[in-house]
Amino acid sequence: MKPRSATPMKIAKFGCIAMSVLLCAAGIIFIVVPDISAHAIGVIVGLSMLVFGVIRFVGCLSKDLYRLAFQFDMETGILLMILGGIILLNPKDVMTFVCIVIGIAILIDGLFKIRVSFDSKKFGIKNWWAIFGTALVTAVIGAVLIFDSAKGAEILTVFLGVSLLAEGILNLCTVMSTVHIIKNQQPDVIDADYYEIIDDIK
Image 1 (tube, rainbow, N blue to C red):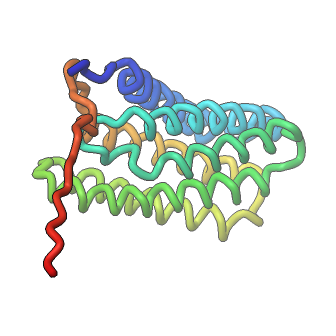
Image 2 (tube, helix red, strand yellow; image 1 turned 180 degrees about the vertical axis):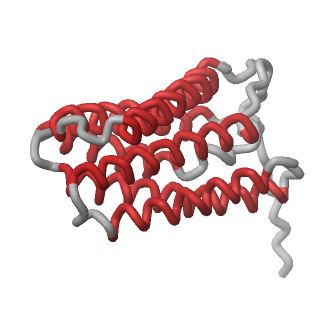
């Protein structure tokens, strides 16, 4: 039987790691330089969401061994791509909208990752508690970003930076703990012929 190609899993795993690092970097920049222009924030956030959405969609199709990190990412990936495209179409004067959108996306992802942490525990993954802890903190930060979106621009930028940093750390923790690439992983479905014998009892 021909083994499944590991290429989609590699793209998903290393792409997610790279994007998580970039999210952390963007978060630190927003925290350190809170007076960055709204247009720049819109472009950075829009591009990040669009690319991350594509990577997560690919991750959902990659069918890695445990199926934990990317199990909810088809819907999340599509949502990120749509929202990223909307932000890129009008990156100016959308600071409040960006914060609400990012807050919702981060809150949803945090809640999904909490579920992933419990599934990881069932699989015997030792670092499940790290996923749970970072997911819980990330979900709380996302909620704060949503409900505090009416604050001043610089404070919002700092909150946005903290949220992106938390999201980046959460995804790094999840991917590094649960995604394992196996070069010779077999397909899920084995083709076989099944015959059913039905005995008529009269």
